[in-house]
Length: 231
Image 1 (cartoon, rainbow, N blue to C red):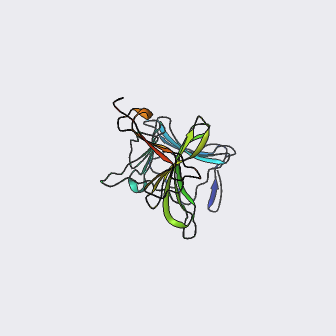
Image 2 (cartoon, helix red, strand yellow):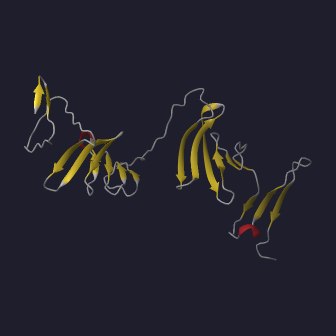
Image 3 (spheres, rainbow, N blue to C red):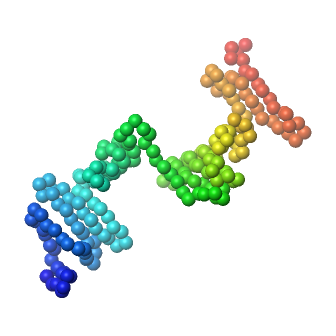
């Protein structure tokens, strides 16, 4: 043990504080060449909490069987179960991320960025579903190219047969739905053929709107009605 003025240093051997109450006034620094640790140990249940640093990283680590709780003000706000599930507003998350509101009001997850007036045509937020190798689906919020506060909801899918990833549908800020088009002009705007099948029989029954536009005849649209009774 060595000291000078208000600074004291303990070197070479670890220090153990085993009294019921101990107080340190001022800052406490734990230093070591590799992986310095600060350990809290419940000797009755052999449960520990470690605060440490390793290379360029820092970590908080509990015993292998212990859950970790973040309790600002004494109430649990965030739970990390030993199995990896994370709970916000719940101490028993049933999935990898479980957000719970203990009230008759919605649980809210908010995604935002710094878009303001003049920031048009910007992707504001995305939710993605990926495999190890590629992105399969995406839901995206994007404002319009001429209005920062006009919200468009876009849906993307990967076609595994052609190995392409593209927008499949969007809902504009005006409420128009577009399938096969990024600029729907009406409440439902479909670029391509449409099948209305009330009997769930596939493309052999129902009403089929077939697109066949040509430069010479812009009204060239076929509507075919199938015979459900096979007459």
